[in-house]
Image (cartoon, rainbow, N blue to C red):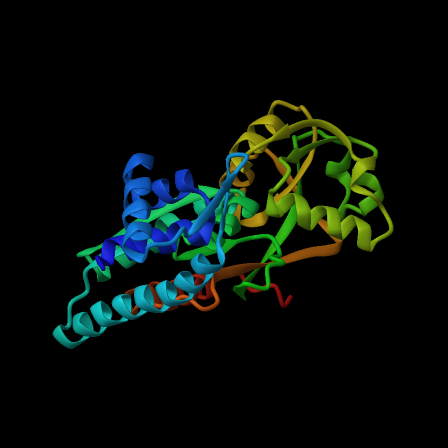
Length: 304
């Protein structure tokens, strides 16, 4: 039974989609279908039920998947053990990050990692928190770093560094005279919001709820998909917003925006997200440990 065929089956069974499996494995859908059909012929049984453009595992498919997970894991473990014995630091690791982390924190991290491991290829995907968590769950990426809380028992979630969220406004805005911004004041001015699925948005919504307010009461002037777009909109005087302090140092130093802390202070954690039971290669562990150390060393001290 070919290793490739088992890997294809394991991926399809994990995501329950021929199309999604093709994207993960960089194969065409006909090639995926061919490998599954050959495996079914070899085992003389149907492994998937196909109804209404959806697939599900048959009882036999469930059994094969339990073995496939072990076979694929052992194969990866074998390859990594041999690499460790020979001292090789080569291969591909796939990393995903939510927008704030991916745009402002990971470029420096990946530059340092590449200098230490020049023969390792790192593939980075940047999307909002929900999308990155889904990719980890689908086994499309090895490690996710996100800024929103994760509620998925199948994944291993570990907090890393803390990040402060602050109010961003154009110079001359009425709130610029305040030393701190109380939650109720956010409701009195046009607000620029992140898109649904953003970790920043979910943290703001929970913070408002904790102080007895509802996100729906915000006067949402516009909804945007990145911090860069929000900073531009604030400078264009379309409203105020709440963003990570780590993202606005340049604009604040140039006097393009005014930054004020919230009261009570709004802090959040960044989280590492990994498959709970997936075999973790030595290379993946190196990237994980390097990422944790880099982020912790670069984190500002909020104990003041």
